[in-house]
Length: 287
Image 1 (cartoon, rainbow, N blue to C red):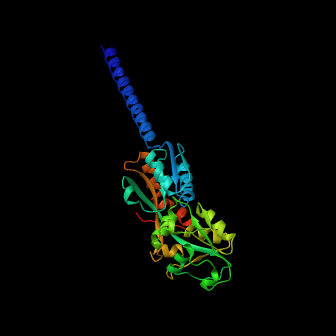
Image 2 (tube, rainbow, N blue to C red; image 1 turned 60 degrees about the vertical axis):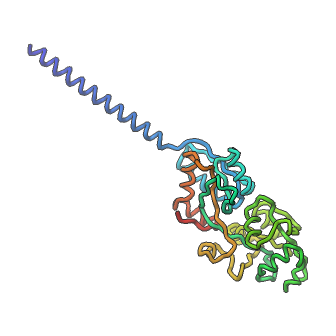
């Protein structure tokens, strides 16, 4: 009888040990599954504003480093394209460097930064500022020589943005103008195109993102930003709300963004990327 007792106790011990191993294995498996759930995977496509695109690309690179299973493709083309692509389902997230319009309320906008739109002239241009009426007169061809504004005897080259560009809409809205009233000499696409055009033509005037203009001036590009209503065009004045021609930089999605899109948007709105926003000469927004 004694050996039976020993055998029974041995079997009981083995069963308990086996059960513990199974529980431990199940717990480890659950932990692995839980860990897998926390790992983001998938692809995102962003299209739209050429103002936001360089910043979005920098944020995307950092996000991919933290989530190796994620790949993010950032394309420009203008705010209008970003909104159209989201609606068509060809982009997960649109980039719009303006507020949503009344007819776009089916979409959701998530601000990640703020920027201003300023007038730029060539660095050698002697003009220190233009008031709103003068700007309107220049863009409607009622004034076409800098001499009429107290500057050099030099024809004015009017640089204007193409349809679908957010800077165009901000510019027109601020001045209360309609696009057909504009008489441009050159039509450009993104901000870099506008800056390159003005930098290459001493008589040119254009309007671009303050952030992009500041970055180019820091790099030695021969342009100068003009104040608006006496307020210098700086990111500091955009941050304080003093600069009159400013705008939000938004990410745009459908009403119910997918989890990966929502995670990337949350990251773009977090303090973790404020250094990237400031490095691009934009103003971080506070959630």
